[in-house]
Each structure stands twice: as structure tokens, then as C-alpha cells.
Length: 284
Image 1 (cartoon, rainbow, N blue to C red):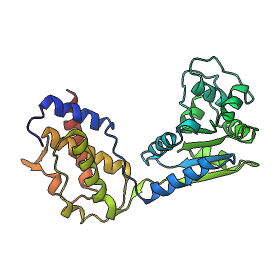
Image 2: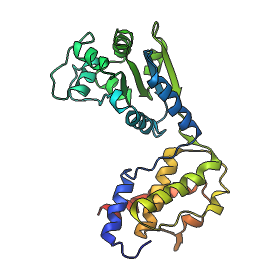
Image 3: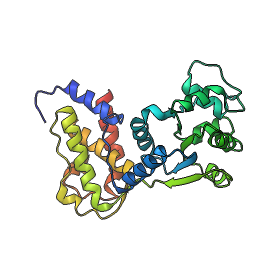
């Protein structure tokens, strides 16, 4: 690590990394396949309701952000508005288009959405449908509104995500509309874990002009278990910032050296303690 980086600068970098703003993305086979499937759907003129299903941390939000970037001129991103109990699904979408409008009670597809569709704004993205549905007790009616949009003459493609089993059950009962479920596990094969870790350190070192040492690759070869991507990134963020801020744990008077320790499921149990120490040093 360059000596000319001040402690203040290192803390600033650590805060960015710990807040998840580093921008690192790992593209494994599953993610590539999901991206390709979504690209095909986005390029099609057929109306369809698509549900991305996966656990928290599976990378679905990042996948949808990339899709939005690739099809920016064709996408309407719906950001949940949680302060109004009267705002229905079409109202949510109208607010995404017109943030300062007062639409709250539309029961049909309004002319404004038809006009948007005519200028190729044909893809509606609703990340984390759980928030939109639960805040207004909309589980029973939410898909009726989405179905209306998909079946209207405007022929919208609607891509959404959920972790809510009840929503998936309602979704599975849809009739008369083309629908698809894409499962995203977010699990990285064991053989690829070391690649993710090295890639993360290389990315951050290049982004921030640092020379933090990644955990020993020979030790990572002993790791033969698959892991969720969010757990790996959490570990990478913690280890990188630990090296950056020279913050370490001690056990029985000895420093716990993660860079020389086999990366097993037991080792990350210490990460919460290390994370707290790193966060305290970065944000205090």
C-alpha cells in the first residue's frame, strides 16, 4: 500500500467500501445466463410478466441495475413510495414517471402511460415487489393491476423481483398472460471463490490506488464449499478494509491472520467482530 496515502484518505476509502459503494461486480455463469435471458425478453415485442426470485443478497438488484443501464431509453424504474396508503400500482408507476404529480387513484392505464409506450418506454422494472405490496396490503390485487398493464394495447414488459412466497403463489395463479419465473440463487461455486476474492482486491487496489494484500490463494484452494455471493463480498470488504486500516483481531494474545488461514465456514464467524472494529475505525 502506498505510504503517501494518509490515514484520513484510507478511512475515506474504507467508508466507501464498507457502505458497498465500491462498484465491484462478479459475473459468474448463473448471472451471465440471467442477463442473457433478460436481454432476450427486453428485446422482444411480446408483453410478458417476469418474476426474479431469490434470497436477499443474491444480486438481483445489481442485475436489474445493469439491465436498466443497457436499456436506459426503454425502461421505467418504479421506486417504492412508502408514505401513501392510497397509492396503487399504476399510481406507483406514474410517480416513477412524474415524481411531482398527484396521480393516486388510477384504476385503468392512463393516457400518459400509453404515450410513454409509444416512444419505446416499454419495460417496467419493480425491484423488491415485497415493499410495494406489503406497505398498502396489496397482495390480493397487485397482480391484477400488473396483468392489466401487460394485457393493455400498450403491451408492457414487466420485470419484478420478490422474496415473498405469498406473492409467488399469487403470481403462479395468473391466467391469460405470458409469465416467467427466473430463479437467482446467488451461490458461487467453491472453485470460483478465490477468483472472486482476488478480483475484489484487484478492483479496489486499482480503483483507490492501494496495495492491499488479498488472502493467501494457496489457502483458498483448500475451500471446497459453495458460498452466497453476498457473504463472499462481505468478507472481502471486511478483509480489504482491515488491511487498509491495519485493524486486526487477537485471540489468546495472538493476531488472527485471515490472510494465512484456510477460508472455511468457521472463519467468517469472526468477521462480525472484525467488521465492528473496522467500521469503528473508519467512521469514528
